[in-house]
Length: 287
Ligand SMILES: C[C@@](CO)(OP(=O)(O)O)[C@H](O)COP(=O)(O)OP(=O)(O)OC[C@H]1O[C@@H](n2ccc(N)nc2=O)[C@H](O)[C@@H]1O
Ligand SMILES: Nc1ncnc2c1ncn2[C@@H]1O[C@H](COP(=O)(O)OP(=O)(O)O)[C@@H](O)[C@H]1O
Image 1 (tube, rainbow, N blue to C red):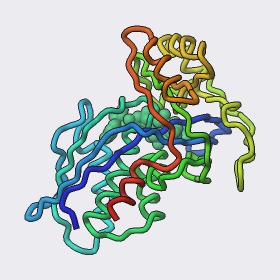
Image 2 (image 1 turned 120 degrees about the vertical axis):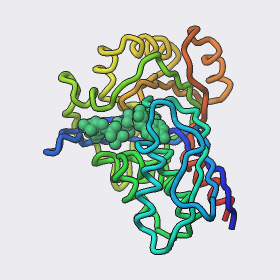
Image 3 (image 1 turned 90 degrees about the vertical axis):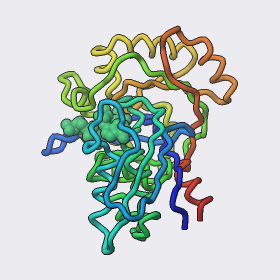
Image 4 (image 1 turned 90 degrees about the horizontal axis):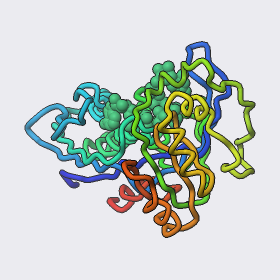
């Protein structure tokens, strides 16, 4: 049994995102296709016997520790323990932009649930971990399950999927987008008819759109400009409620050529889409 493990906390893309309606509680019913990227944050977990509680080795800028999804995930998990738990120190190597639609915070929460379930020897099953994850955010369950998936409901009803593992240029326009602001925008497309994705989806996901895109383009000219630039080279889309956008390429070299020619000042990265989460690949190696 190790005392210290470093685990990946990958990004997700919403390859498409449809909004089918609004629930009585105000949340929106979605249909979306999640795929992971082989790019993300790294989290290091170290047991600190003789101490109690969860400490972060350093803060995430702009996020108080007690609001950090890593700390909130650890606390939620600790409520399921039936034995005293040793303290834990968590280091964060943050690469993913925050509030970018890449699910970084949700992914950090899922990595924490999986890591501490192992280090604290809680033996909770995946259903329980996904259920705890859902209390922290709609995107946490897909990161706990670790399979590319169609998501329904608010994204928690998951059907495994196998989209092509293409390469992506991901760009982060210079703006931060609040998810709540987009879901409450007046002109948001909210009535896209449901498509049949269960028991199996038959179709080309790239034919479908992100229903948040029109509103985000109007409210954030930076996103509009970046989408116009990237779509010269093929279909480009928003992920989640933005601000990140992505373009799909069949090879790494094709993606890198476009990446090298991006307008100056814009940040982002090139990554491969993967249908098994890098977190689950690493956990399988540790077994
Ligand atoms: C849109 C998606 C798609 O993957 O991703 P991101 O852009 O955040 O990465 C997710 O569904 C984001 O889910 P989650 O991360 O739980 O959303 P939050 O930031 O907690 O939501 C902020 C607010 O947006 C509204 N909201 C959120 C999700 C949803 N399906 N319907 C909503 O109406 C609610 O008012 C909520 O209070
Ligand atoms: N560990 C964390 N990493 C990133 N963001 C976090 C974290 N903990 C809490 N947050 C909060 O969650 C918000 C959403 O972050 P994130 O999941 O990265 O973006 P998105 O949901 O747009 O993909 C951030 O703006 C931040 O306030």
